Length: 198
Image 1 (cartoon, rainbow, N blue to C red):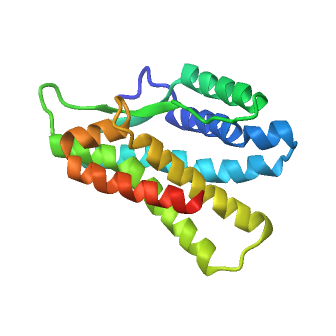
Image 2: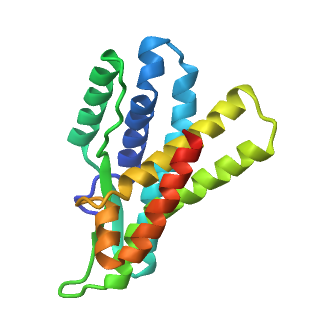
């Protein structure tokens, strides 16, 4: 079954490292703050990796074969956009690092499974953003712990919001197509979290 498959762990690690640089590029380029890379690595680890693993695990619970596959061109484009826009003074994060590929059974389509698989990623980000925000509000953290948790909250909220856009092939398109009411609820929640954090 694994013949011809690239190593999923390597794809996840490479995607995580590139996205960590992308999310911290402004601080790295303009202020040479290497600690920003640390915050970004933790935030991207919770946001991106958990998002993709959530998709994969829900698919597997429905009896489907699923694995993450990096899109190296997309990672290169994300890095280039971050570098260029950082130099222009307006850093922009736009990334298509890869996706969980779900292999179904020929001629079989489970619409409920498709909906739950699509929802799993953004929901994991919403939950992580809320947890991080609650901890920030309930604690007296300062310095590196505070900034790390703030990055976790903001990156998770951004990834949830971005992925809920109703544009193919994003999760939001699949969710909206299957259940507009659930899509609206998730979108409103992610917008509220994002606005609260920024």
